[in-house]
Amino acid sequence: MLRFIATSLCLRCPRVPVLPLHVRTRGTASPAENQQTVDAFYELAVDIQKVRKLKGWVLHQHPAYAKEVAGLLRDMGASGPVIANVLVVHPEAVLCNPEEMEAQRELWTSVCPNKKELVGIIEKFPASFFTSACHHENQRNNIAYFHSLNLNKRIITKLMASAPQSFSRPVEQNQVMVDTLQRSYIELGGEKYNMKIWLQKLLSQNPFVLLKSSDVLRQNLLFLKNKGFTTAELLHLLSKLRGFVTELNPDSMSQTLLYSQEMMGCSEEQLREIVLKCPALLYYPKHILADRFEGLLRAGISVSQIMDTPTVFELTTQIVNYRLQKLRAHGYDARTGSLEVLNGTKKDFEQSYGKLKLRVQRPLFNPVAPLKTFD
Image (cartoon, rainbow, N blue to C red; front, side, top):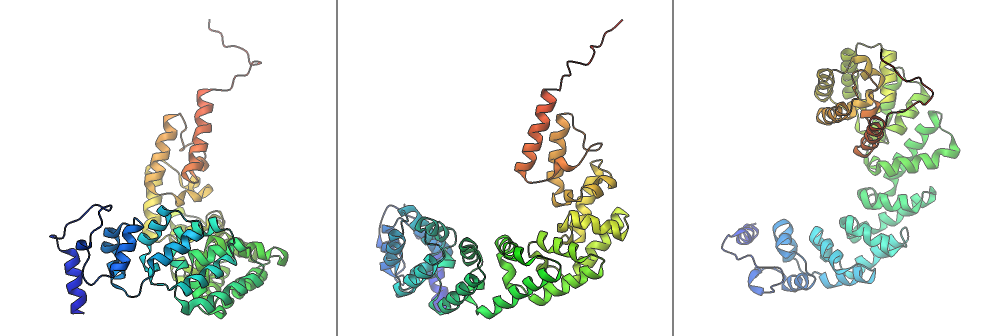
């Protein structure tokens, strides 16, 4: 412990000169660092000062395989800058021995044979590729399991990259969650022929759903059923919430629904219709809903408008005000029109705004209409 503290203090000492990356010198490295790793990082143009600052402990490890990592990536088509970026973001890669790295390449190419695509994935998710050998058996079993579900290879690759924990654990745990999702889908009226597409979409949009509790999913669906949602509506919510329903709980949903009903003064039936239009409403805690609701009212938006277009709650008050100002500058008063034009991503809004701006700049002319005359 004392050695670790002394090393950390040494690395942070202000008297240690910071040299340009292109200058190679042994004087900048602590005696406890693995000099072979340091030299290899310099040769690969890795920002070693950044590595020292964020993950300096890696440079003290023996053995390390920096040149082997670079060779593997280079053999897969990675450029020098890509290799340097991978080692800056995830220098722990040098702690994987060549046998482990080769085993990982074999696993990943079984689902992503395109080397260029695989290099892109490794650059974005290096920690998912460079993992311990103790996970290899679980990874193989999980790949085989998802293959047996006839899932698209791209979906499996995305799961491995963005939610590697789900592939590092025993396959039985993933089977429990997938079985629960499939059973819920069928029980809620989903068609068997469409289940694979539905499951692929859900896992693609929220890979982390596999790491959630299947009991939580069942409890939340039961809560919503008791609130009066039909099986078809529950299937709609499960699909729209994209698996995030596992991150909710009955207590939080109960508070959110109660507050939403009170602030809009609507019936339970109307509240269910609002939730179906905007399932994300179930997520927001009371203080966020209150801030956005009050912001809309201050902007002159009526409660009836909000009930007609509840998806406006997905926007922060700052974004709403900005978009209202842009629309108002071109003669569109959202207080008397539809709020639909406010919705969507920045790109969606800019497209709607552009169309509106064009209509204002080029008003429609009806050649049949009589000209106005003045006496």
